[in-house]
Image (cartoon, rainbow, N blue to C red; front, side, top):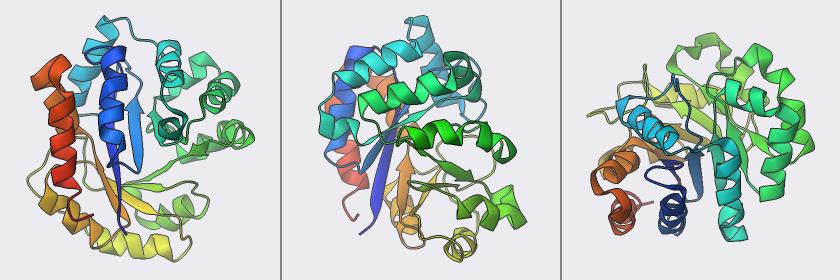
Length: 244
């Protein structure tokens, strides 16, 4: 059965509301990505960049995100994957960062700007604390796909398109070809993200991979509905996962 991962930015419009939104999404999400706001989120499109800026203006910090996570039900915490940038984790201290992830009971961490060649500086701290350090594979990875995939943990985040995150009308990358290369070296689940925002796109992804990741559609809804977004998020995720 296909999996589904949702994404929201922590602290937009507040950490109290982030907790409420996570709880609203948890019933129909196998995992939930929570983005730690960062001043220069290079992998993100305009929607998530704006959410990150709003959260930073609200005074959200990594420590406060961890404190919010501590207040969630343990079953929900085990579904959480933090998305952070290398400078944030480095400044916090890799060892302390992953130790804090463990104390919260989290599932994994995504660091989109961590080069594969530097992964060895971070992975031991993740492993020691039982936290999956998620591998990203992009359409430009080409002959590196098998190398990137062979040591993957938790799930593989397969980027569906070139560029940054954001809602797109169609997915143009040959996902099935990349998934085939990945499956030559690992049975780690392949989840596809970037640009997925409709039930039709979710179904198309599920036909070739293990599941879909949806972010900008939820973040856009929060931008539109603000503190009242929870029921709208519940409605959208039900529509997106109807056939999952």
